[in-house]
Image (cartoon, rainbow, N blue to C red):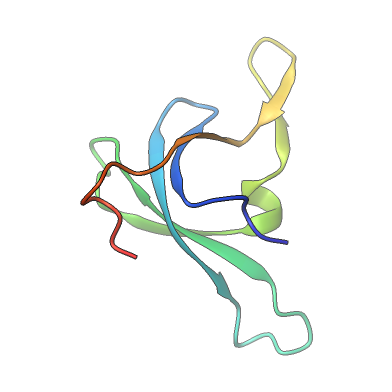
Length: 85
């Protein structure tokens, strides 16, 4: 399973992230999990690089109003010159 595209995503709590690339856990040969490598665009953690399992990145979560929505919602492509891939 892969994310439909790289670009800017909004976390359900409101922060914005740039998906850099996809990776696989090379240490777990029995179950090579797909991972998402992404960078925070929101202060105070802007520039911090994070890794999350693809299944977690793409899952739906319960929102504060009780509805369900994506943990990360695609907002659009990265502005030209900001995507390091």
